[in-house]
Amino acid sequence: MLSFLVTACCIAFLQCCAGSDVLRWRFYYASQDDAWKAHYQEIFDHGIREALCCMGRIEYLTVIEDDEVYSVAKLLGDLVAYRASGTGHLELLTGLALLQKHGQASKSSEHFVEAPVEHLQAALAFHKFAEAAYTGPLLDFGRNPFVFPCVWLHRQGVLTPWTRKRRPTLDGDNWLRGHAAAFINFLNLPSEVLRRGRVRQKKCEAAYFVVVLHELRTVVIAVRGTETPEDLIIDGLGRERSLTEVDLDGLINSSFIHPSIKKRVKSSFPHFGHSGIVETARDLYTQIEGYPGDESQSGGFVSSLLGVGCECEGYNLRVVGHSLGGSIAALLGIRVWFPLFDILLFACIPC
Picture (tube, rainbow, N blue to C red):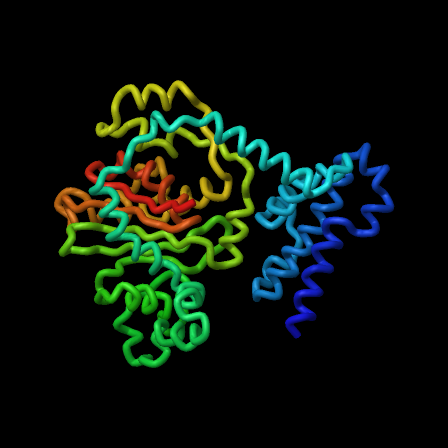
């Protein structure tokens, strides 16, 4: 069975990269880049949809133009357009390696600043929240490679179903409220610290958890990294997306930022970011603070915790995340810096 799976994957990859139909029409594709891109776009689009369907995402089986799968497939089709000129994969990788080497040689470490010790200590203390956001099997698979199904089921609270009603309700959680149980059990914290969260995902939606720690006078927003097929699609939306002044609100309007930095940010527009990460950060801001520009709302959920006279007035705000979650947390932190005033931002983004 293992040999069959490996063989099937290799054949699919070879057909995608150098199928017989591509070789037969190479001279035509050499002069028609659009035909080459369209060919590979169709291959990637059908392949991704079939894979998602096998994972239980039947809604992606229907081909809808301009949806997220179509966008990822189009990007991948554009990436392999170099084959039209007869360029091989090794030649492309060699060129990328030379570009990377040249870019590293031109960089200087003179302007690098050593991270303050207190920031490193904060990263060490709150990194566990970024890990706990992985409430699926992925977290236990790395720690318990042989018995991870049993450990994951135990962390999900399958063995203690009578405690179900004591656990917080998360958007998209299962009947046992297992994702909330997994998050709390990993951190070894009481259930009442988890105030809000979401594990259900659609287009450009991140899973997140909001935690209130009274003993540390801190509110933590933990954003999950890549774990589900939806997260992989967000990773694949790699085209540039323009950042607006609203996205950089914390850098432009915060009183804690030096005026020279504000001036440099304003004078260097337009700024761009990863399309999937930018859209996901905007959606997450909507989840915790409401729609921007809606004057009918006096404040969102986080503002209702940290605002004047509220439960967590004067508390710090930590925005944490790992991998994809760290990138989303960084953009979210830049945006909420000004509206929430006295906060302390932290985002874990390992290379």
